[in-house]
Each structure stands twice: as structure tokens, then as C-alpha cells.
Amino acid sequence: MRFPLRLAALAIGLLVLGPASAAEDRLGVRGPIEFAGTPYALASADEPQPGYVKQEYLPEGATFDRYETMMLVEFMEGDMKPADIVRAQTQMLDERRAMDPFVNYDIVLANEGDGIILDFLMSGETEDGTRIAEWNAYRYVSGGNPEGKSGGWLVGFSRRAYGDDLTPFLERLRSERGATVATLAALAVPPTSAD
Image (cartoon, rainbow, N blue to C red; front, side, top):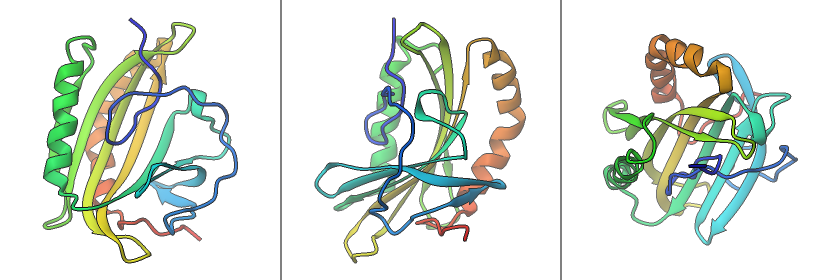
């Protein structure tokens, strides 16, 4: 079975996209965002529905169709409780497990009063049949946006491997996962630009 390619924050499923292009910041997080020593530049900004803005950040030279790492920053207006969002996400992951043997997740409380991190693994295939493993850490925090509207933030980190790189990727993930989650837990929400 083939799966689409990129994760959406509130409905897990990956989408095929082309190369990153210049994007206009809609959240006051123009970037670059520095994460674990790597700068991530704003590559995509979208408002899929009124009150919901998602922005994606890639390291220099990366494209959406074959990235290795990516940062996400999203904001949704309304009464957003991190525990409710994580509950819905884990339910979708549990349902996906029936068709995806890679699905696995863990829930981590971020710093006291500072949201919840959902750390999860899943897999899929590219259009040409190349197997993908994708690990994500999504930090959910309630708070206001720069315009003073209340809602919920998602700040996420995504890491991918393709084809023959899956086994080494999963082995590295065992040792790197904890440090990456700790780095995400320490990141300001919303993130500040590196420059």
C-alpha cells in the first residue's frame, strides 16, 4: 500500500510537494530557526483554513520531496488544549498501526506547564515505491499569537530516511532521539529567529 509523503499537524498523513520556494512569514517566526546547531529557513507558509497557519522550515539545499530534516511551526486559533490534540493524534496513530508496522509513539511532558511533546515514528513510500521512515517530535503549547489571538502552537522537528538508509536511520534514532526531544522541549514557543 502506498502512503502520501508529508505529515500534517492535526491529521497525520504525508503530502507530495515540490521544491521549497520563498514564503511569507504569517506567524512572526520568519527564521532562520536554529535547532541543534542547524539553521532552518522558512520554506513554506500556508493557511489551510481560517485561523490555522502552518509554516515549514528547511536547512539550506533541502527540498520537500526528499528532505532529511525539517522544522514546523503552526498556530491554530481557539480553545486548544495540548492534551486533547495529543489524544487525537495518538488515536490516528493507533488506527494507522493496522497498515504501518513502523508506527510507534511516546508522550513526553515538556517543562512544567509548557505543553506536551508527542514523539512518533511512521513509514510510507514515495511515488516511485521507495520506502520512507519518518520520525517526528511535535511540541504542543497553548498561548497567543503575535496578533493577540489565543490558541495553540505546534513546534515540531521531523527527520526522514529513504530506501537503504532506513536501518542505519533507526539505529541512530535510538541514540539521538532523547537529545532531540530535550532540544525541542527547551526551544522558545514560538521560536525566535537565529539572527
